Length: 241
Image (cartoon, rainbow, N blue to C red; front, side):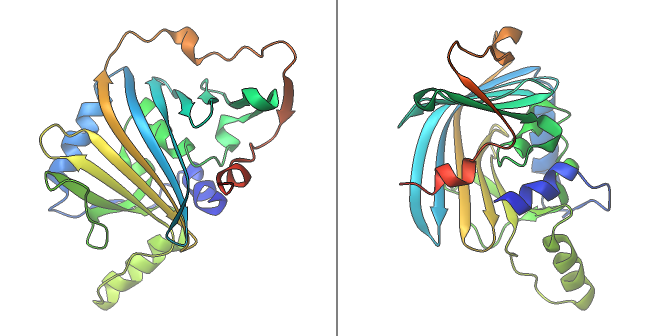
């Protein structure tokens, strides 16, 4: 997954466009999340390789502007991923270790979701957004959007297909966003990379502007815990069943 998120974290400033039939739901989605200073939701995370589920985890996520988020993993084991606005921390209590890296340098696959704790503008991630045709929403009441990631080969392939009049296909690197028509809540995010790796987040129980203390986004290293500088070995961890 590393390649996709290196590009996303760069947040390129090239062209941005929205398919006309996708614009109404995008406007509602951005407005709903932009208006909230704090957010809270439960999540189910599924990591797959070659279409085969490898690991499923669940927990609760918190977001606070500007640029802070906290992912508390509750099952099958307790872990913590926290971004305090400057530093990203990944804490594994069972290993007595915490990995830290500058947030701007992090290639972690959760990093793009920090836009929920920012200006909530999809053009920070996507060169173009349109209704998805290859991935269906879990609910008939939802809309599935396809985001052409900025800075990846997906952007150029999409542009070339448009110029030649061909029907573009979903490239190896892609992002899909499932949004509720009724509430404009973000219910699902699907991240694909390399044509064989897929990471899916399902969100529920969204709370807007809950009472979330800023102290929740400060990490204090517990006694006896070793600090490792550098990117957390997330990909290595995810492939273990």
